[in-house]
Image 1 (cartoon, one colour):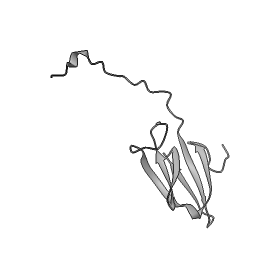
Image 2 (cartoon, rainbow, N blue to C red; image 1 turned 120 degrees about the vertical axis):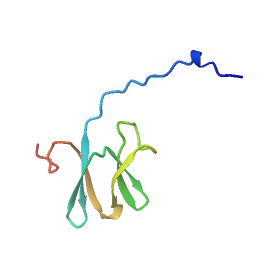
Image 3 (cartoon, one colour; image 1 turned 45 degrees about the vertical axis):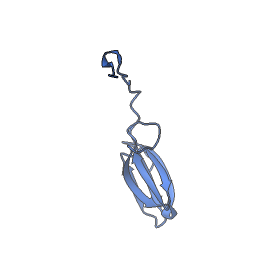
Image 4 (cartoon, one colour; image 1 turned 135 degrees about the horizontal axis):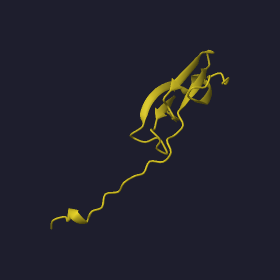
Amino acid sequence: MALDTASITPIRLTPGAAPSPVSFDITLRDGSREHVTGADAYQQEQSMTTFFRTEGRRGIDCWSVRMASFRTDQILAIRRCQIGSDPAGVT
């Protein structure tokens, strides 16, 4: 039996509003600070906390790009920042 492709209607996805560009400011146990630009989500993966670029998808999935990883036990604080703002919080 042949598939009648003339009756198939393609689904067009209309992208929503572009997500606000964000970055993360990470304070480590030794007092140093790291700034991860381009990531918009993070999650713990065993002993590491990994920062991802999801390209506006609602969650981290197999298409997400790993941007940076840090040992979870070395992280004191994670701050989400708008890109273009001062990581210290002064805009």
